[in-house]
Amino acid sequence: MNDQREFWNDRFGREGYFYGTTPNRYLASHIDMLPPQQTLLFLGEGEGRNAVYASQCGHTVTALDAAEIGLAKTALLAQQKGLEIALIHTDLEQWNPLQQYDAIMCSFLHLTEPLRSEVFSKSLAQLNKGGVFVGEFFSIHQFSKNTGGPKALELLYTANDLLAIMDTLPCDVLELCEMDTELQEGKVHNGLASVVRLKVRKR
Ligand SMILES: C[S@@+](CC[C@H](N)C(=O)[O-])C[C@H]1O[C@@H](n2cnc3c(N)ncnc32)[C@H](O)[C@@H]1O
Image 1 (tube, helix red, strand yellow):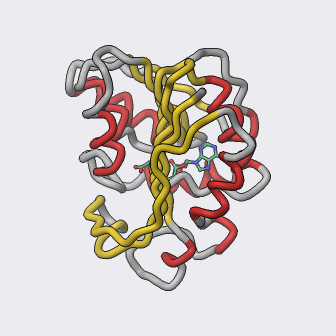
Image 2 (cartoon, protein in one colour):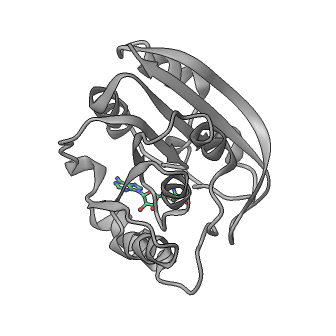
Image 3 (cartoon, protein in one colour):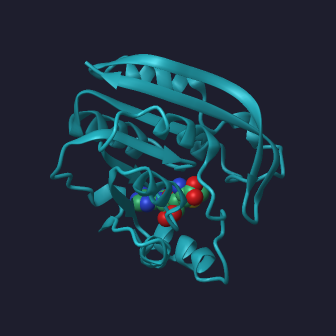
């Protein structure tokens, strides 16, 4: 836990919001399509930009992260807008989920195997039947780009890797694509970036 926690606390401890306060565009487009008053969990939510957006849309929202400084900034952003967001401070390695959700989402959650597969498996288990998992990840093609993301291949994704994981889980893949997209997200996600987008529905 300490590695991720210290790394991200250092970034989130700086002035301002590292990835801004505007939600990730892919996640926001799916939040906009949800029925009213859903229960949502955001994994690796950092400083809360997606969680606050979902809460503003009227959903009941939980944000999980290993970095407590990110969660404190999530709470502050929510409070400034008169919203309440539940917080879970844990490393996903120790995640012991207790609740069911209608949707679980994440943006740029950089996980290595085997934790990556474990987190997808646990997420599917925590979704209500018909619930959706939505994520945007940096693809391996982002490795040579300077528009954000980790410089470690094992933290980057391919659509094929994700498909292989999803094939083992009780879900239908609704969307899975590798593409380039223009990011404008705070201090470091700026410019053309290579991503993998995934949306699945629990059977
Ligand atoms: C690139 S940041 C993205 C933050 C947020 N999702 C966003 O897009 O604004 C990655 C986030 O994932 C969290 N994270 C990474 N590994 C984690 C783990 N093993 N357990 C919990 N959180 C983790 C970090 O603390 C950080 O907040």
